[in-house]
Amino acid sequence: MPSDLAYWLISAPLHDGDTSVILQDTRRALGAGAVVGGWEMPELKAGTLSSLLALSDNLPKLDASFTSAVSKLLDTLRSLVADDKTRLAQHARVNDRPADDYLVPDAGGSTGWRWDRSRWGEGGKVSDVVDALSKEMASIEQMQKQKSQSYNLAKGQLTNLQRKRLGNLSQRSLIDVVDRGKLVENSEFLETLLVAVPKNLTKDWNDKYERLTSMVVPRSSEPIAADDEFTLVTVTVFKKVRDEFTHKCRENKFIVRDFTYDETAAEKQKKELAQLEAEEKELWTDLLKVSRINFSEAFQLLTHLKTVRLFVESVLRYGLPADYAGVVVKPDPKTAVKTLKTLSAHFNYLASSSQGPTAKKTKAGAASGAGGDVAGEWATVMEQEYYDFVLFEIPKVEI
Image (cartoon, one colour):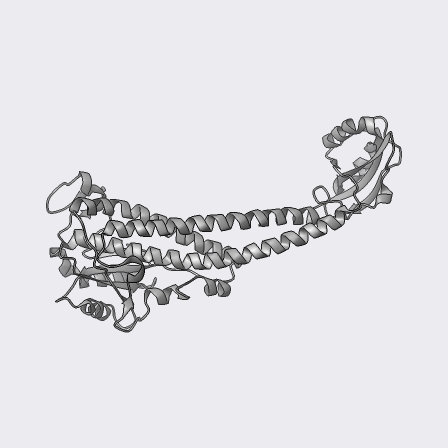
């Protein structure tokens, strides 16, 4: 059963060379409420049977890779706009219009999706078109990777600095917390340590700190700041016992902060924060712009690759000459099963015209067909879900 969260791309042989007949017949079969559009099939050079079979085996992997790239780009856009559906709809567009309108530009008319001849030509070899599509997608992914890495690096640096300013007293920067007057400075023997004491251990600290090691100045502990989790206190010790005192504090779950007073540090941190915020905003804007363009391009590449798959499988299924017409159907999730049954009944006449090496799959996973067991190079083709018509899926862009 094809997914009801995707468009169904279908092909069938032409009736008397008229591409509109299949579109009209499909609309008539599905009823007035169905969303059905035309889909142009390019005139490509099929090549040899062995080359088509090789393509048929390779295209599903390429298809999955293209689909993944489009999905990642959509996720990037969603993340950049903080999952705001209105803003996402403004950016997740294809050729500056919603993806639905790109796939079905004229749901009730005779025109439909068109193959981009200006970029991918017409009458060329199938393998050449696939190579060109792959190179273009690889270029998009490389560009996206570079832009994303630059933005994520800047965002990470900004987040780390903000965390230092906004975290609890055991983690955050103390530059704007500690008053210079609370510290013993320029002493040959003494120094003041700053200790983050969990609030539930405040009494333990007051009872123990003077006896954690020798050479602790009595009554030197003084609270200078507090938050919901910790109280920041001072304590003056002799420099020679600093390491031992720090170790004893750690054993008692008191956290000695590494701090050196610098009267210019606060201003430096403020300037650094402003610089990182400006850099992050600039890179965010750049990444959003590039992601929007890349999403549009990648989605178009995906639809063209799907069309190539449709062509290749049509040749394998229906044979030559390559005179086929395509239609695209947008199934309603509530009636998708009924829609598939209607399509199967409508295209039932194609069962006798299929010439390709496909066969229905049994419950045990083995393929059965008129010619009995077939193995080797046909196995991959035969493992696919089988209908009397060629069908592929194009994922819907879920906003």
